Length: 140
Image 1 (cartoon, rainbow, N blue to C red):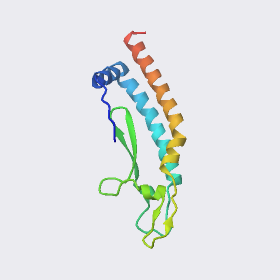
Image 2: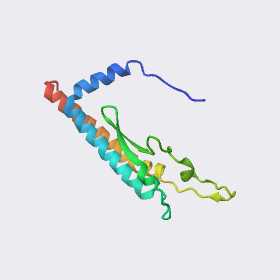
Image 3: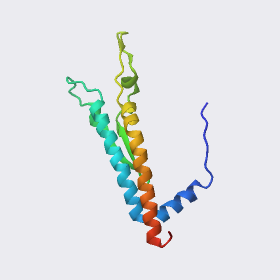
Image 4: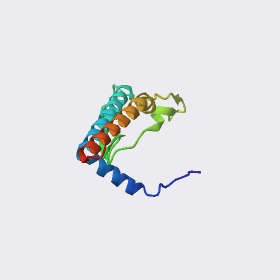
């Protein structure tokens, strides 16, 4: 059973944060998030399974990035008009003939590798952006 939570006043808090950061601070955070997304995408590209005999393109060719909100960057696999994330490749599946095809994890291991450094980079960029925003407005 899924559980959802709504943070009351989150929109007001987000608006205040963006106002304090200013465009310079937002750029700093966006660059940090872009760097983390690039690292993650590079790791996924190395690990994604590829069939050398496939003439129709590879899964790695569907990797991409898009901006998610004013500060976020999102890495996706598959795009408009294409299939989404192929979980069966990562976890394994049964082939049409009934044999088991072993999984070849690529998305979650890459996420595990990048998660800690991306989080630390994001926190550093937020702190630097807030300090720069407050110093520019004469706050602290």
